[in-house]
Picture 1: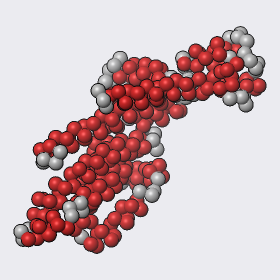
Picture 2: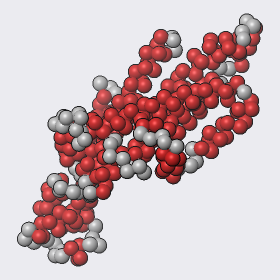
Picture 3: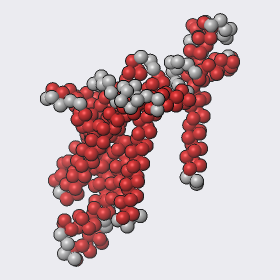
Amino acid sequence: MKSFLPVLTVVAAIFALWYLAVIPMNMHAALTTAERGGAVISPEGAAARRDLSGISLAANNSEHIASTFNQDRPRLPAPHQVARELWDTTVEKKITSKRSLVFHGWITLSATLLGFAIGTGLGIVLAIGIVHNRAMDMSVMPWAIASQTIPILAIAPMIIVVLNSVGVQGLLPKAIISAYLSFFPVVVGMVKGLRSPDHMQLDLLKTYNASNAQGFWKLRLPASMPYLFASLKIGIAASLVGAIVGELPTGAIRGLGARMLTGSYYGQTIQIWSALLAAAIVAAGLVAIVTLIQRVTLRRMGLS
């Protein structure tokens, strides 16, 4: 309860600010619609209101504030509109329907999990090599850091075009983009974790005549687990972002990214926001699963 109440307070504050932001964002359209219906608006005419802020228009036309929360194509949809769209596209639609967010979410989740597996495996292997090989530390680590300076929106189309040219299509290109975003936090966290044992612990292993492999399995790897799981939480969320970004330049018709893209084409902001919120829910669920695995693993290892 002590942790639940602060979270609930923050969520309530976010929704309150969201509702307040809806009023000025949608006020111009609400007044234009009301004026077309014969209502008296101050000032009259869309041209006269064009340069006025939504806040001033709301103050002068307070009787039309309620209409800002129920527009068909609002600039900023209200939370209840997004919640209704989520309900309609998850509970009331068949999972196999192309209008179901569960269907689109599974497409994105598949690429996310595959990319996360590839990125995590690559990150762990690179981290082990960096820690145990001086040449890799001097060469691979700078390249890993430099790779993250390239904007994902710039490199994603290049990856997809190159892979399509060699006949690789479907899930794998999106998974590679996910892996590109997820491997770096795993590399950094794992390197930090493998190097976390102090000199006294390492010297103790030497007095026992332990080999490098024994030092790795008995000391370095267990010590790296808290760092690894912290990195995995970041990596799994980054993988989801990569999968969504990978759907945008391809003109995909399936996936949460495709759902957002379709909504932007037709001005369906409620659809865009429902897909965004669905992606946030998926990300929160994935991070929660990693956290649960972390607790079980560290408890069995006696680290928590």
